[in-house]
Length: 347
Image (cartoon, rainbow, N blue to C red; front, side, top):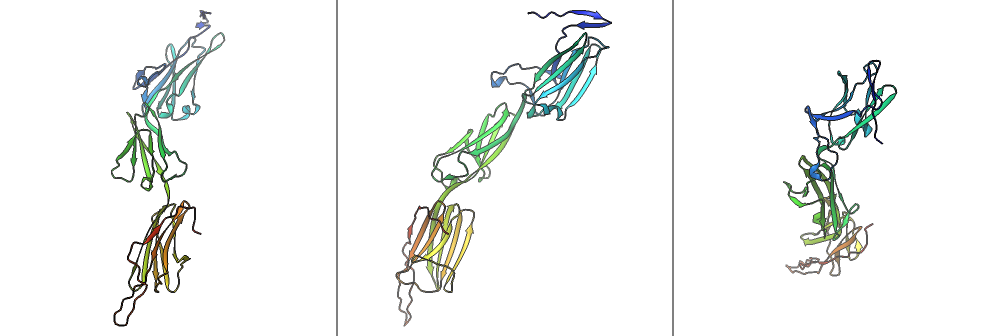
């Protein structure tokens, strides 16, 4: 049914039984911004750039100066009206005008401001008009995360993902390793997949999100965990000194064994342990007594993912210099090294 508007004069007032809706317009730098009713493609996104000062204006015709209309604003989300917004209202000859003056941020994107006008005519009449803002802004709330929860085991596949909020949407995602100065790109794209991880892949990865208005970075730590890898060596001067290093994640523990028996500090045995970073340990063993041909020195390492050991077998070598005999000199051949990836853990 067509709505019929009836206009007549009442005590000097122009009365309509169905006044029109108010008009809501957006101004930037005193220039009116065209309203975009519908967006079907990214390239059609219009709006004002974040940081711009704008004026959102609501106006309505004055029908009766003795019965002034009332203009009020509301917003969705509601809190936007309380964020550094200046409201100004004035009456001109034939119009009542209310302005909202504020600086737009990314939080205003797709926010709706509604102007409500209430006319006090023969009966109270209320009309509404809304305007949805479109704001262009650089990437915000950029975040990066690892597909695996907590850590990834050596040899497994892992995917690092990056996401960001931007308008227009992010054009490029780029991944970097922060161990390199200057940073060199590792890969482009929202996701970075490493198919066969090893200890060298551990570290911090930086994702950069970019659109035409700027960039923003986010970072994530990749923690590749693995069973211990071990190396050891011995030499003989006046005493026997052996050095053992283990590399693993979590950081491995080290202990020395002599023919299967755990060694501790004593009168003839001295052990000094060192921590080398977050994933390596070092132990130095000094023995002040000769070893027999049946003795085997073993460095043993373990973490929650497995164990590793390296053995050094000693053979007595007799050297005659006058009446002096030296025994317990280590064999100069390569040490016997074995690695066991069972679930043993040091106590």
